[in-house]
Length: 288
Image (cartoon, rainbow, N blue to C red; front, side):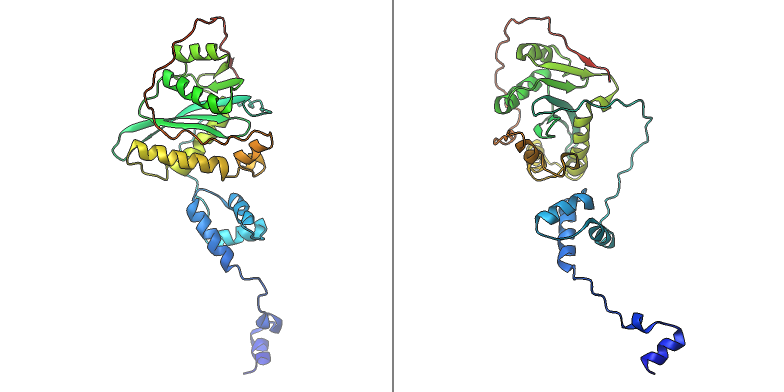
Protein backbone atom coordinates (compact mmCIF):
# COMPACT_ATOMS: atom_id res chain seq x y z
CA UNK A 1 0.00 0.00 0.00
CA UNK A 2 1.32 3.39 -0.94
CA UNK A 3 2.01 6.12 1.59
CA UNK A 4 -0.62 8.35 -0.07
CA UNK A 5 -3.35 5.71 0.26
CA UNK A 6 -2.38 4.72 3.82
CA UNK A 7 -2.48 8.35 5.01
CA UNK A 8 -5.86 8.87 3.28
CA UNK A 9 -7.34 5.81 5.00
CA UNK A 10 -6.29 6.83 8.53
CA UNK A 11 -6.81 10.55 7.95
CA UNK A 12 -3.15 11.38 8.61
CA UNK A 13 -1.33 14.28 6.97
CA UNK A 14 1.48 13.18 4.64
CA UNK A 15 3.70 16.10 5.72
CA UNK A 16 3.55 14.85 9.30
CA UNK A 17 4.41 11.32 8.18
CA UNK A 18 7.48 12.56 6.32
CA UNK A 19 8.63 15.00 9.01
CA UNK A 20 12.12 14.43 10.38
CA UNK A 21 13.31 16.34 13.45
CA UNK A 22 15.87 19.05 12.76
CA UNK A 23 16.72 19.51 16.43
CA UNK A 24 20.45 19.55 17.13
CA UNK A 25 21.97 16.54 18.85
CA UNK A 26 22.21 17.22 22.58
CA UNK A 27 23.92 14.00 23.67
CA UNK A 28 27.06 15.77 24.88
CA UNK A 29 24.98 18.36 26.75
CA UNK A 30 22.90 15.65 28.42
CA UNK A 31 25.98 13.73 29.51
CA UNK A 32 27.60 16.82 31.02
CA UNK A 33 24.34 17.87 32.69
CA UNK A 34 23.99 14.44 34.29
CA UNK A 35 27.61 14.55 35.46
CA UNK A 36 27.19 18.01 37.01
CA UNK A 37 23.90 17.03 38.65
CA UNK A 38 25.55 13.94 40.12
CA UNK A 39 28.48 16.00 41.39
CA UNK A 40 26.24 18.71 42.87
CA UNK A 41 23.08 16.86 43.76
CA UNK A 42 21.34 19.76 45.49
CA UNK A 43 21.76 22.23 42.61
CA UNK A 44 18.79 23.07 40.37
CA UNK A 45 18.88 23.77 36.65
CA UNK A 46 19.15 27.58 37.10
CA UNK A 47 22.44 27.13 38.92
CA UNK A 48 23.72 24.31 36.69
CA UNK A 49 23.22 26.40 33.53
CA UNK A 50 25.80 28.90 34.81
CA UNK A 51 28.44 26.15 34.99
CA UNK A 52 27.48 24.77 31.57
CA UNK A 53 27.79 28.19 29.96
CA UNK A 54 31.18 28.68 31.63
CA UNK A 55 32.27 25.42 29.95
CA UNK A 56 31.24 26.71 26.51
CA UNK A 57 27.76 25.21 26.07
CA UNK A 58 25.33 27.49 24.23
CA UNK A 59 21.92 26.73 25.70
CA UNK A 60 18.96 28.77 26.92
CA UNK A 61 17.11 28.05 30.14
CA UNK A 62 13.98 26.66 28.42
CA UNK A 63 15.90 24.02 26.48
CA UNK A 64 17.96 23.08 29.52
CA UNK A 65 14.86 22.80 31.69
CA UNK A 66 13.27 20.43 29.13
CA UNK A 67 16.35 18.21 29.15
CA UNK A 68 16.58 18.54 32.94
CA UNK A 69 13.05 17.17 33.31
CA UNK A 70 13.54 14.44 30.71
CA UNK A 71 16.59 13.22 32.61
CA UNK A 72 14.57 13.28 35.86
CA UNK A 73 17.16 15.40 37.66
CA UNK A 74 14.71 17.61 39.55
CA UNK A 75 15.85 18.22 43.13
CA UNK A 76 13.30 17.06 45.66
CA UNK A 77 12.63 19.36 48.55
CA UNK A 78 13.41 17.88 51.92
CA UNK A 79 10.37 17.56 54.14
CA UNK A 80 10.09 19.46 57.37
CA UNK A 81 7.64 20.42 60.05
CA UNK A 82 5.62 23.54 59.29
CA UNK A 83 6.14 26.33 61.75
CA UNK A 84 4.24 29.50 62.46
CA UNK A 85 5.86 32.57 60.95
CA UNK A 86 5.79 35.86 62.83
CA UNK A 87 6.40 39.39 61.61
CA UNK A 88 9.52 39.65 59.47
CA UNK A 89 11.81 42.70 59.45
CA UNK A 90 14.26 43.18 56.54
CA UNK A 91 17.96 42.95 57.35
CA UNK A 92 19.74 46.25 56.52
CA UNK A 93 21.93 45.79 53.45
CA UNK A 94 25.69 46.07 53.81
CA UNK A 95 27.59 48.09 51.22
CA UNK A 96 31.18 46.89 51.64
CA UNK A 97 33.20 43.89 52.86
CA UNK A 98 33.97 43.79 56.59
CA UNK A 99 31.05 46.08 57.34
CA UNK A 100 29.16 43.32 59.15
CA UNK A 101 29.93 39.69 59.96
CA UNK A 102 27.38 37.11 61.05
CA UNK A 103 28.23 34.30 63.43
CA UNK A 104 26.42 31.10 64.41
CA UNK A 105 26.84 27.43 65.35
CA UNK A 106 25.78 24.31 63.43
CA UNK A 107 25.60 20.88 65.09
CA UNK A 108 26.16 17.44 63.55
CA UNK A 109 27.45 14.02 64.57
CA UNK A 110 29.92 11.38 63.40
CA UNK A 111 28.99 7.78 62.52
CA UNK A 112 30.08 6.80 66.03
CA UNK A 113 27.31 8.98 67.43
CA UNK A 114 29.69 11.53 68.92
CA UNK A 115 28.42 15.04 68.33
CA UNK A 116 30.43 18.06 67.22
CA UNK A 117 29.73 21.71 66.53
CA UNK A 118 30.78 24.02 63.72
CA UNK A 119 31.51 27.70 64.32
CA UNK A 120 30.50 29.62 61.19
CA UNK A 121 31.52 33.19 60.33
CA UNK A 122 30.08 34.86 57.20
CA UNK A 123 30.62 38.28 55.61
CA UNK A 124 27.12 39.68 55.01
CA UNK A 125 28.18 41.76 52.00
CA UNK A 126 30.21 39.27 49.93
CA UNK A 127 28.60 36.10 51.42
CA UNK A 128 32.10 34.68 51.90
CA UNK A 129 32.60 31.94 54.46
CA UNK A 130 35.36 33.41 56.62
CA UNK A 131 35.61 30.49 59.04
CA UNK A 132 34.09 27.04 59.51
CA UNK A 133 35.67 25.53 62.62
CA UNK A 134 34.61 22.07 63.80
CA UNK A 135 35.22 20.72 67.32
CA UNK A 136 33.46 18.74 70.00
CA UNK A 137 33.36 21.77 72.29
CA UNK A 138 33.74 25.45 71.45
CA UNK A 139 33.84 27.88 74.36
CA UNK A 140 33.66 31.67 74.39
CA UNK A 141 37.45 31.87 74.67
CA UNK A 142 37.78 29.62 71.62
CA UNK A 143 35.35 31.81 69.65
CA UNK A 144 37.43 34.90 70.49
CA UNK A 145 40.60 33.10 69.46
CA UNK A 146 39.16 32.05 66.10
CA UNK A 147 37.91 35.58 65.44
CA UNK A 148 41.40 36.91 66.10
CA UNK A 149 42.74 34.52 63.45
CA UNK A 150 40.18 35.69 60.90
CA UNK A 151 40.89 39.36 61.67
CA UNK A 152 44.64 38.78 61.34
CA UNK A 153 44.27 37.70 57.71
CA UNK A 154 41.28 39.80 56.64
CA UNK A 155 40.95 42.86 58.82
CA UNK A 156 38.56 44.01 61.52
CA UNK A 157 34.78 44.21 60.94
CA UNK A 158 32.70 47.15 62.10
CA UNK A 159 29.96 44.92 63.51
CA UNK A 160 29.37 41.28 64.41
CA UNK A 161 25.85 39.86 64.65
CA UNK A 162 24.97 36.71 66.60
CA UNK A 163 22.24 35.06 68.63
CA UNK A 164 22.13 34.83 72.42
CA UNK A 165 23.91 31.51 72.88
CA UNK A 166 25.83 30.98 76.11
CA UNK A 167 29.20 31.00 74.35
CA UNK A 168 28.40 34.29 72.63
CA UNK A 169 27.09 36.07 75.72
CA UNK A 170 29.96 34.95 77.94
CA UNK A 171 32.32 37.33 79.72
CA UNK A 172 35.09 36.22 77.36
CA UNK A 173 33.21 37.48 74.30
CA UNK A 174 32.02 40.70 75.94
CA UNK A 175 35.58 41.48 77.06
CA UNK A 176 36.95 40.63 73.62
CA UNK A 177 34.43 42.93 71.90
CA UNK A 178 35.36 45.80 74.23
CA UNK A 179 39.11 45.31 73.74
CA UNK A 180 38.76 44.94 69.98
CA UNK A 181 36.52 47.97 69.60
CA UNK A 182 33.96 45.98 67.58
CA UNK A 183 30.22 46.55 68.00
CA UNK A 184 28.59 43.22 68.88
CA UNK A 185 24.86 43.08 68.15
CA UNK A 186 22.62 40.38 69.62
CA UNK A 187 19.40 39.52 67.79
CA UNK A 188 16.14 39.31 69.73
CA UNK A 189 15.68 35.90 71.43
CA UNK A 190 13.79 33.44 69.25
CA UNK A 191 14.20 35.57 66.09
CA UNK A 192 16.75 33.76 63.85
CA UNK A 193 15.45 35.67 60.81
CA UNK A 194 17.19 38.75 62.20
CA UNK A 195 20.42 36.90 61.44
CA UNK A 196 19.24 35.83 58.01
CA UNK A 197 22.55 35.78 56.13
CA UNK A 198 24.25 33.19 58.33
CA UNK A 199 21.01 31.20 58.65
CA UNK A 200 20.87 31.01 54.85
CA UNK A 201 24.49 29.86 54.80
CA UNK A 202 23.74 27.23 57.47
CA UNK A 203 20.96 25.82 55.31
CA UNK A 204 23.30 25.45 52.34
CA UNK A 205 26.00 23.90 54.54
CA UNK A 206 23.59 21.31 55.92
CA UNK A 207 21.87 20.60 52.61
CA UNK A 208 25.00 20.31 50.45
CA UNK A 209 27.52 18.83 52.90
CA UNK A 210 26.27 17.65 56.28
CA UNK A 211 23.25 15.77 54.88
CA UNK A 212 25.37 14.28 52.09
CA UNK A 213 28.41 13.03 54.04
CA UNK A 214 29.06 10.49 56.80
CA UNK A 215 31.97 11.61 58.97
CA UNK A 216 34.21 8.94 60.45
CA UNK A 217 36.24 11.29 62.63
CA UNK A 218 36.69 14.92 63.56
CA UNK A 219 39.66 15.23 61.20
CA UNK A 220 37.48 13.88 58.39
CA UNK A 221 34.81 16.49 59.14
CA UNK A 222 37.42 19.29 59.21
CA UNK A 223 38.88 18.23 55.87
CA UNK A 224 35.42 18.05 54.28
CA UNK A 225 34.54 21.48 55.69
CA UNK A 226 37.76 22.96 54.34
CA UNK A 227 37.13 21.60 50.83
CA UNK A 228 33.46 22.59 50.81
CA UNK A 229 34.19 26.10 52.12
CA UNK A 230 36.81 26.66 49.44
CA UNK A 231 34.36 25.44 46.79
CA UNK A 232 31.64 27.67 48.27
CA UNK A 233 33.84 30.77 48.12
CA UNK A 234 35.56 30.21 44.77
CA UNK A 235 33.36 27.93 42.62
CA UNK A 236 29.73 28.00 43.79
CA UNK A 237 27.75 30.82 42.15
CA UNK A 238 25.09 32.77 44.08
CA UNK A 239 21.89 34.18 42.62
CA UNK A 240 21.91 37.04 45.15
CA UNK A 241 25.34 38.12 43.84
CA UNK A 242 24.28 38.18 40.19
CA UNK A 243 25.40 34.57 39.67
CA UNK A 244 28.96 35.32 40.77
CA UNK A 245 31.05 33.46 43.31
CA UNK A 246 31.70 35.22 46.64
CA UNK A 247 35.38 35.55 45.73
CA UNK A 248 34.56 37.11 42.35
CA UNK A 249 32.06 39.47 43.97
CA UNK A 250 34.61 40.51 46.62
CA UNK A 251 37.14 41.20 43.85
CA UNK A 252 34.85 43.97 42.60
CA UNK A 253 35.67 45.88 45.79
CA UNK A 254 39.39 45.37 45.21
CA UNK A 255 39.62 43.05 48.22
CA UNK A 256 40.90 39.59 47.40
CA UNK A 257 41.88 37.34 50.26
CA UNK A 258 44.57 34.97 49.07
CA UNK A 259 44.98 32.97 52.24
CA UNK A 260 42.72 29.90 52.56
CA UNK A 261 40.55 29.10 55.55
CA UNK A 262 42.30 27.71 58.59
CA UNK A 263 42.45 23.93 58.21
CA UNK A 264 43.85 22.78 61.51
CA UNK A 265 41.81 21.92 64.57
CA UNK A 266 41.62 23.41 68.01
CA UNK A 267 45.28 23.22 68.92
CA UNK A 268 45.65 24.59 72.44
CA UNK A 269 47.73 27.74 72.65
CA UNK A 270 47.80 30.33 75.41
CA UNK A 271 45.43 33.26 75.38
CA UNK A 272 47.13 36.63 75.71
CA UNK A 273 46.36 38.26 79.07
CA UNK A 274 43.52 40.73 78.89
CA UNK A 275 44.24 44.44 79.30
CA UNK A 276 42.32 46.88 81.44
CA UNK A 277 39.90 48.64 79.15
CA UNK A 278 36.88 50.79 79.40
CA UNK A 279 33.78 48.98 80.43
CA UNK A 280 31.23 51.45 79.16
CA UNK A 281 30.95 49.83 75.72
CA UNK A 282 27.35 49.18 74.93
CA UNK A 283 26.27 45.83 73.53
CA UNK A 284 23.37 46.72 71.31
CA UNK A 285 20.47 44.44 70.53
CA UNK A 286 18.79 44.19 67.16
CA UNK A 287 15.09 44.35 67.77
CA UNK A 288 14.06 44.01 64.12
